[in-house]
Image (cartoon, rainbow, N blue to C red; front, side, top):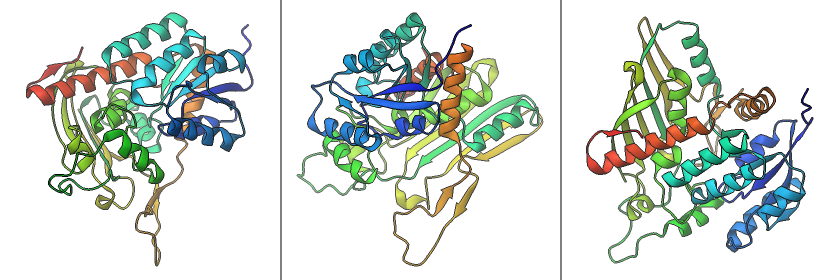
Length: 368
Protein backbone atom coordinates (compact mmCIF):
# COMPACT_ATOMS: atom_id res chain seq x y z
CA UNK A 1 0.00 0.00 0.00
CA UNK A 2 1.44 3.36 -1.03
CA UNK A 3 1.85 5.91 1.76
CA UNK A 4 1.18 9.54 0.88
CA UNK A 5 2.49 12.54 2.84
CA UNK A 6 0.09 14.29 5.18
CA UNK A 7 1.30 17.60 3.78
CA UNK A 8 2.63 18.20 0.27
CA UNK A 9 5.61 20.55 0.26
CA UNK A 10 5.70 22.96 -2.69
CA UNK A 11 8.40 24.86 -4.54
CA UNK A 12 7.09 28.06 -6.14
CA UNK A 13 9.06 28.32 -9.38
CA UNK A 14 8.82 32.04 -10.07
CA UNK A 15 6.00 34.27 -8.92
CA UNK A 16 6.62 37.13 -11.33
CA UNK A 17 3.26 36.99 -13.10
CA UNK A 18 0.94 36.80 -10.12
CA UNK A 19 1.20 35.00 -6.82
CA UNK A 20 -2.48 34.03 -6.67
CA UNK A 21 -1.78 30.45 -7.76
CA UNK A 22 0.70 29.83 -4.95
CA UNK A 23 -1.61 31.50 -2.44
CA UNK A 24 -4.56 29.48 -3.74
CA UNK A 25 -2.67 26.21 -3.29
CA UNK A 26 -1.52 27.27 0.18
CA UNK A 27 -5.16 27.84 1.21
CA UNK A 28 -5.53 24.05 1.43
CA UNK A 29 -4.25 22.62 4.74
CA UNK A 30 -2.48 19.73 3.01
CA UNK A 31 -0.17 22.01 1.03
CA UNK A 32 2.79 23.93 2.42
CA UNK A 33 4.94 26.43 0.55
CA UNK A 34 8.52 25.42 1.33
CA UNK A 35 10.65 27.56 -1.00
CA UNK A 36 10.46 30.15 -3.77
CA UNK A 37 12.98 29.67 -6.56
CA UNK A 38 13.98 31.15 -9.89
CA UNK A 39 16.93 31.17 -12.24
CA UNK A 40 19.79 33.51 -11.30
CA UNK A 41 19.78 35.33 -14.65
CA UNK A 42 16.23 36.71 -14.39
CA UNK A 43 16.08 40.52 -14.11
CA UNK A 44 16.05 42.41 -10.82
CA UNK A 45 12.31 43.15 -10.93
CA UNK A 46 11.63 39.39 -11.08
CA UNK A 47 13.90 38.69 -8.12
CA UNK A 48 12.11 41.42 -6.17
CA UNK A 49 8.67 39.90 -6.78
CA UNK A 50 9.90 36.45 -5.85
CA UNK A 51 11.43 37.77 -2.65
CA UNK A 52 8.15 39.47 -1.67
CA UNK A 53 6.28 36.15 -1.82
CA UNK A 54 9.05 34.36 0.09
CA UNK A 55 8.96 37.04 2.78
CA UNK A 56 5.17 36.86 3.03
CA UNK A 57 5.33 33.13 3.83
CA UNK A 58 8.64 33.36 5.75
CA UNK A 59 10.35 30.82 3.52
CA UNK A 60 13.68 30.93 1.63
CA UNK A 61 14.11 32.44 -1.81
CA UNK A 62 16.71 30.47 -3.77
CA UNK A 63 18.18 31.77 -7.02
CA UNK A 64 18.65 28.25 -8.36
CA UNK A 65 15.62 26.26 -9.56
CA UNK A 66 17.37 22.90 -9.78
CA UNK A 67 18.83 23.23 -6.28
CA UNK A 68 15.42 24.10 -4.83
CA UNK A 69 13.85 21.05 -6.45
CA UNK A 70 16.70 18.85 -5.24
CA UNK A 71 17.34 20.05 -1.68
CA UNK A 72 14.03 21.19 -0.15
CA UNK A 73 12.13 17.87 -0.04
CA UNK A 74 9.26 19.11 -2.22
CA UNK A 75 6.70 16.98 -4.02
CA UNK A 76 4.96 19.75 -6.01
CA UNK A 77 6.14 22.63 -8.20
CA UNK A 78 3.95 25.71 -8.71
CA UNK A 79 4.87 27.61 -11.87
CA UNK A 80 3.78 31.23 -12.42
CA UNK A 81 6.51 32.84 -14.49
CA UNK A 82 6.28 34.77 -17.74
CA UNK A 83 4.28 32.75 -20.29
CA UNK A 84 7.32 32.06 -22.44
CA UNK A 85 9.06 30.34 -19.48
CA UNK A 86 6.08 28.28 -18.26
CA UNK A 87 6.94 25.08 -20.10
CA UNK A 88 10.68 25.19 -19.39
CA UNK A 89 10.11 25.42 -15.64
CA UNK A 90 7.33 22.82 -15.67
CA UNK A 91 9.47 20.39 -17.71
CA UNK A 92 12.40 20.76 -15.32
CA UNK A 93 10.10 20.11 -12.38
CA UNK A 94 8.57 17.02 -14.03
CA UNK A 95 12.01 15.64 -14.86
CA UNK A 96 12.92 16.07 -11.19
CA UNK A 97 9.91 13.89 -10.32
CA UNK A 98 7.67 16.70 -9.04
CA UNK A 99 3.96 17.09 -9.73
CA UNK A 100 3.16 20.38 -11.47
CA UNK A 101 0.56 23.09 -10.94
CA UNK A 102 0.90 25.78 -13.60
CA UNK A 103 -0.53 29.21 -14.24
CA UNK A 104 -2.12 30.02 -17.60
CA UNK A 105 -1.50 30.16 -20.51
CA UNK A 106 0.12 26.79 -21.16
CA UNK A 107 2.74 28.44 -23.38
CA UNK A 108 3.03 30.66 -26.44
CA UNK A 109 4.82 28.09 -28.63
CA UNK A 110 3.52 24.80 -30.01
CA UNK A 111 6.90 23.08 -29.76
CA UNK A 112 7.05 23.87 -26.03
CA UNK A 113 3.50 22.56 -25.50
CA UNK A 114 4.44 19.26 -27.09
CA UNK A 115 7.65 19.01 -25.05
CA UNK A 116 5.68 19.52 -21.87
CA UNK A 117 3.10 16.84 -22.73
CA UNK A 118 5.94 14.39 -23.38
CA UNK A 119 7.70 15.26 -20.11
CA UNK A 120 4.60 15.03 -17.92
CA UNK A 121 3.59 11.67 -19.35
CA UNK A 122 7.11 10.19 -19.49
CA UNK A 123 7.84 11.18 -15.88
CA UNK A 124 4.42 9.94 -14.71
CA UNK A 125 3.63 13.04 -12.67
CA UNK A 126 0.35 14.90 -12.34
CA UNK A 127 -0.35 18.25 -13.98
CA UNK A 128 -3.00 20.86 -13.21
CA UNK A 129 -3.60 24.05 -15.14
CA UNK A 130 -5.02 26.54 -12.63
CA UNK A 131 -8.57 27.39 -13.69
CA UNK A 132 -12.04 28.51 -12.58
CA UNK A 133 -13.99 25.30 -13.16
CA UNK A 134 -14.94 24.92 -9.49
CA UNK A 135 -16.75 28.24 -9.20
CA UNK A 136 -20.29 27.69 -7.79
CA UNK A 137 -22.10 28.60 -11.01
CA UNK A 138 -19.97 26.22 -13.09
CA UNK A 139 -20.48 23.40 -10.60
CA UNK A 140 -24.25 23.99 -10.66
CA UNK A 141 -24.34 23.98 -14.46
CA UNK A 142 -22.37 20.73 -14.56
CA UNK A 143 -24.73 19.12 -12.04
CA UNK A 144 -27.85 20.15 -13.95
CA UNK A 145 -26.47 18.90 -17.26
CA UNK A 146 -25.42 15.59 -15.67
CA UNK A 147 -28.89 15.20 -14.15
CA UNK A 148 -30.44 15.55 -17.61
CA UNK A 149 -32.47 18.69 -16.88
CA UNK A 150 -31.85 20.08 -20.39
CA UNK A 151 -31.53 16.79 -22.22
CA UNK A 152 -28.59 16.26 -24.53
CA UNK A 153 -26.47 19.42 -24.95
CA UNK A 154 -26.57 20.82 -28.48
CA UNK A 155 -24.82 24.18 -28.20
CA UNK A 156 -22.84 26.27 -25.72
CA UNK A 157 -21.93 29.96 -25.65
CA UNK A 158 -19.68 31.73 -23.16
CA UNK A 159 -19.40 35.49 -22.66
CA UNK A 160 -16.08 36.21 -20.94
CA UNK A 161 -15.83 39.99 -20.73
CA UNK A 162 -13.11 40.82 -18.24
CA UNK A 163 -13.69 44.31 -16.78
CA UNK A 164 -10.15 45.44 -16.17
CA UNK A 165 -8.10 48.29 -17.52
CA UNK A 166 -4.86 47.95 -19.48
CA UNK A 167 -3.52 51.48 -19.37
CA UNK A 168 -4.60 54.39 -21.58
CA UNK A 169 -7.60 53.87 -23.90
CA UNK A 170 -6.94 53.26 -27.56
CA UNK A 171 -6.52 56.52 -29.46
CA UNK A 172 -4.88 58.47 -26.63
CA UNK A 173 -1.27 58.19 -27.88
CA UNK A 174 -0.31 61.50 -29.41
CA UNK A 175 1.09 61.67 -32.96
CA UNK A 176 4.86 61.20 -32.97
CA UNK A 177 4.97 59.45 -29.58
CA UNK A 178 6.66 56.02 -29.58
CA UNK A 179 4.50 52.90 -29.18
CA UNK A 180 4.03 51.57 -25.67
CA UNK A 181 6.60 48.87 -24.87
CA UNK A 182 4.81 45.69 -23.76
CA UNK A 183 6.97 44.38 -20.93
CA UNK A 184 7.71 47.81 -19.45
CA UNK A 185 3.97 48.52 -19.31
CA UNK A 186 3.17 45.17 -17.69
CA UNK A 187 5.86 45.61 -15.03
CA UNK A 188 4.59 49.09 -14.13
CA UNK A 189 0.93 48.03 -14.19
CA UNK A 190 1.54 45.25 -11.65
CA UNK A 191 1.24 47.81 -8.85
CA UNK A 192 -2.55 48.15 -9.24
CA UNK A 193 -3.20 44.72 -10.77
CA UNK A 194 -3.96 45.96 -14.27
CA UNK A 195 -1.15 43.97 -15.86
CA UNK A 196 -2.09 41.13 -18.16
CA UNK A 197 0.46 38.69 -19.59
CA UNK A 198 3.81 39.87 -18.28
CA UNK A 199 6.78 38.83 -20.40
CA UNK A 200 8.87 39.80 -23.38
CA UNK A 201 6.32 38.48 -25.89
CA UNK A 202 3.05 40.43 -26.23
CA UNK A 203 0.01 38.20 -25.62
CA UNK A 204 -3.59 39.12 -26.36
CA UNK A 205 -6.69 38.15 -24.45
CA UNK A 206 -7.39 35.00 -26.47
CA UNK A 207 -4.10 33.53 -25.27
CA UNK A 208 -4.23 35.10 -21.83
CA UNK A 209 -7.85 34.46 -20.83
CA UNK A 210 -9.16 31.97 -23.41
CA UNK A 211 -8.37 29.03 -21.15
CA UNK A 212 -11.23 29.97 -18.83
CA UNK A 213 -14.20 29.88 -21.25
CA UNK A 214 -12.68 26.95 -23.15
CA UNK A 215 -12.23 25.17 -19.83
CA UNK A 216 -15.96 25.64 -19.20
CA UNK A 217 -16.73 24.17 -22.62
CA UNK A 218 -14.59 21.10 -21.88
CA UNK A 219 -16.09 20.60 -18.43
CA UNK A 220 -19.73 21.10 -19.40
CA UNK A 221 -20.06 19.38 -22.78
CA UNK A 222 -16.87 17.31 -22.98
CA UNK A 223 -16.49 17.45 -26.76
CA UNK A 224 -13.25 18.14 -28.57
CA UNK A 225 -13.10 21.19 -30.82
CA UNK A 226 -12.40 20.21 -34.42
CA UNK A 227 -12.59 23.54 -36.31
CA UNK A 228 -12.83 27.23 -35.46
CA UNK A 229 -13.62 30.54 -37.07
CA UNK A 230 -12.47 33.65 -35.21
CA UNK A 231 -12.32 37.42 -35.38
CA UNK A 232 -10.28 39.75 -33.18
CA UNK A 233 -9.31 43.38 -32.79
CA UNK A 234 -7.49 45.83 -30.54
CA UNK A 235 -10.55 47.83 -29.59
CA UNK A 236 -10.08 49.20 -26.07
CA UNK A 237 -6.45 49.59 -25.02
CA UNK A 238 -3.53 51.48 -26.53
CA UNK A 239 -0.92 48.98 -25.31
CA UNK A 240 -2.70 46.19 -27.20
CA UNK A 241 -3.02 48.28 -30.35
CA UNK A 242 0.65 49.30 -30.22
CA UNK A 243 1.75 45.69 -29.85
CA UNK A 244 -0.71 44.22 -32.39
CA UNK A 245 -2.47 41.86 -29.98
CA UNK A 246 -6.20 41.58 -29.43
CA UNK A 247 -8.22 42.75 -26.46
CA UNK A 248 -11.54 41.60 -27.97
CA UNK A 249 -12.32 38.41 -29.90
CA UNK A 250 -15.06 36.01 -30.89
CA UNK A 251 -14.74 32.33 -31.82
CA UNK A 252 -17.18 29.88 -33.36
CA UNK A 253 -16.46 26.26 -32.43
CA UNK A 254 -17.33 23.14 -34.38
CA UNK A 255 -17.08 20.17 -32.00
CA UNK A 256 -17.23 16.43 -32.31
CA UNK A 257 -20.67 14.86 -32.07
CA UNK A 258 -22.25 17.73 -33.97
CA UNK A 259 -22.10 20.21 -31.07
CA UNK A 260 -21.55 23.87 -31.81
CA UNK A 261 -20.17 26.54 -29.56
CA UNK A 262 -19.14 30.17 -29.45
CA UNK A 263 -17.10 32.46 -27.23
CA UNK A 264 -16.82 36.21 -26.79
CA UNK A 265 -13.62 37.15 -24.97
CA UNK A 266 -12.39 40.59 -24.07
CA UNK A 267 -10.61 42.86 -21.60
CA UNK A 268 -13.19 45.64 -21.75
CA UNK A 269 -12.07 48.15 -19.12
CA UNK A 270 -13.05 48.84 -15.52
CA UNK A 271 -15.62 51.48 -16.47
CA UNK A 272 -17.70 48.84 -18.27
CA UNK A 273 -18.91 46.93 -15.22
CA UNK A 274 -19.31 47.42 -11.44
CA UNK A 275 -17.04 44.49 -10.62
CA UNK A 276 -15.21 41.77 -12.55
CA UNK A 277 -17.12 41.79 -15.81
CA UNK A 278 -20.01 40.11 -17.59
CA UNK A 279 -19.24 36.40 -17.59
CA UNK A 280 -22.09 34.06 -18.50
CA UNK A 281 -22.53 30.52 -19.76
CA UNK A 282 -25.43 29.56 -22.04
CA UNK A 283 -26.12 25.89 -22.77
CA UNK A 284 -28.94 24.72 -25.06
CA UNK A 285 -30.09 21.12 -24.94
CA UNK A 286 -32.73 18.91 -26.57
CA UNK A 287 -35.30 19.62 -23.82
CA UNK A 288 -34.21 22.86 -22.18
CA UNK A 289 -31.55 25.51 -21.67
CA UNK A 290 -29.32 26.97 -18.95
CA UNK A 291 -28.06 30.51 -18.41
CA UNK A 292 -25.46 30.64 -15.65
CA UNK A 293 -23.79 33.79 -14.31
CA UNK A 294 -20.26 32.83 -13.35
CA UNK A 295 -20.12 35.42 -10.56
CA UNK A 296 -23.12 34.18 -8.57
CA UNK A 297 -23.62 34.09 -5.66
CA UNK A 298 -22.59 37.68 -5.05
CA UNK A 299 -23.50 40.65 -2.91
CA UNK A 300 -23.59 44.33 -3.87
CA UNK A 301 -21.79 46.81 -1.61
CA UNK A 302 -22.36 50.54 -2.16
CA UNK A 303 -21.58 53.36 0.27
CA UNK A 304 -20.87 57.08 0.39
CA UNK A 305 -17.39 58.14 -0.83
CA UNK A 306 -16.67 54.65 -2.12
CA UNK A 307 -13.35 54.56 -4.04
CA UNK A 308 -14.01 54.55 -7.81
CA UNK A 309 -12.00 51.38 -8.45
CA UNK A 310 -13.44 49.35 -5.60
CA UNK A 311 -15.62 46.46 -6.79
CA UNK A 312 -19.32 47.02 -6.09
CA UNK A 313 -20.32 43.40 -6.60
CA UNK A 314 -18.37 40.83 -4.62
CA UNK A 315 -18.42 37.08 -4.92
CA UNK A 316 -19.25 34.96 -1.91
CA UNK A 317 -19.28 31.24 -1.10
CA UNK A 318 -16.57 30.40 -3.65
CA UNK A 319 -14.20 27.58 -2.75
CA UNK A 320 -12.53 27.39 -6.16
CA UNK A 321 -8.95 27.48 -4.87
CA UNK A 322 -9.57 24.86 -2.17
CA UNK A 323 -11.43 22.57 -4.57
CA UNK A 324 -8.70 22.81 -7.21
CA UNK A 325 -6.09 21.88 -4.60
CA UNK A 326 -8.29 19.02 -3.37
CA UNK A 327 -8.74 17.81 -6.95
CA UNK A 328 -4.95 17.76 -7.34
CA UNK A 329 -4.55 15.65 -4.20
CA UNK A 330 -7.16 13.19 -5.44
CA UNK A 331 -5.36 12.94 -8.79
CA UNK A 332 -2.10 12.09 -7.04
CA UNK A 333 -3.50 9.69 -4.47
CA UNK A 334 -6.09 7.97 -6.67
CA UNK A 335 -3.94 8.00 -9.83
CA UNK A 336 -6.43 9.86 -12.01
CA UNK A 337 -6.39 12.97 -14.14
CA UNK A 338 -6.98 16.45 -12.77
CA UNK A 339 -9.94 18.60 -13.79
CA UNK A 340 -7.66 20.30 -16.34
CA UNK A 341 -4.74 18.00 -17.02
CA UNK A 342 -1.94 18.17 -19.55
CA UNK A 343 -3.87 16.70 -22.49
CA UNK A 344 -6.91 18.93 -21.92
CA UNK A 345 -4.61 21.94 -21.53
CA UNK A 346 -2.86 21.04 -24.79
CA UNK A 347 -6.25 20.84 -26.56
CA UNK A 348 -7.18 24.30 -25.30
CA UNK A 349 -3.83 25.67 -26.45
CA UNK A 350 -4.38 24.13 -29.91
CA UNK A 351 -7.87 25.65 -30.11
CA UNK A 352 -6.50 29.11 -29.29
CA UNK A 353 -3.67 28.73 -31.81
CA UNK A 354 -6.19 27.77 -34.51
CA UNK A 355 -8.36 30.75 -33.55
CA UNK A 356 -5.40 33.14 -33.83
CA UNK A 357 -4.58 31.65 -37.22
CA UNK A 358 -8.21 32.11 -38.31
CA UNK A 359 -8.05 35.77 -37.26
CA UNK A 360 -5.14 36.22 -39.66
CA UNK A 361 -6.46 34.11 -42.56
CA UNK A 362 -10.11 35.11 -42.39
CA UNK A 363 -10.99 31.45 -42.92
CA UNK A 364 -12.07 28.55 -40.69
CA UNK A 365 -9.08 26.62 -39.37
CA UNK A 366 -8.73 23.05 -38.17
CA UNK A 367 -7.57 22.40 -34.60
CA UNK A 368 -4.41 20.27 -34.67
